[in-house]
Every structure is written in C-alpha cells, then in structure tokens.
Length: 110
Image 1 (cartoon, rainbow, N blue to C red):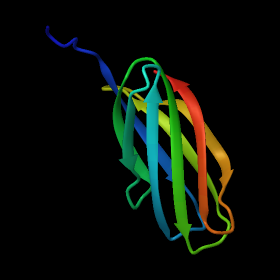
Image 2: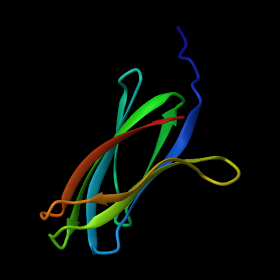
Image 3: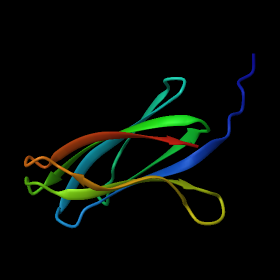
Image 4: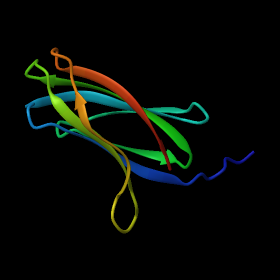
C-alpha cells in the first residue's frame, strides 16, 4: 500500500530575550494523531520544523545564562512559500526561574 502524500508546512519557532548571552533549549510538537517531533533551538533561539495540517501542541524548554531570572518571548510562525509569515502563537511575556530555566506549552492550528 502506498503512503499518502501529506502536505507539510514550515513552522519557525523563535525565542527572544534581551538579558541572556547564552540559550539552550528544545521545542517539541505533538499533533492530533500523537505524532511527536523535536528540534533544538540554535544559538540565536531559532528552530524550524515541517508539520502537517491539523491541531498541534508545542512544548518548549529553555535554559539561559547567566543563571538568573530572565524575561523572554516565544513565537510560532508558519512560513509560506511566498508572502509574509503567519503568526500561529505569540507568548511575549514568559519568564524563567531564578535558575534560568523554564518550560511551557501552547496549542496552534495549521
């Protein structure tokens, strides 16, 4: 039996923070069929994935240094082949613990 060709969308996850000089972190997504994907944020706080249409939950974990409380934002955007990115979720007011770590989750639809 042949596999179905499922359209996938490019999703860009971005973490921004003005008070850290180092970022380590991961983003994981799970769709309505419980299919998971994971990606590590690069040094600039960016991770990309190709995801199928549907409902998704994304979970992120970040660790920032210096080890102190940091305010940060995280955003998920669909990147079309042409035109401007579409913001799927924007969480601009997150913060880490005093240990420089945080985890969170949010839902979006492609």
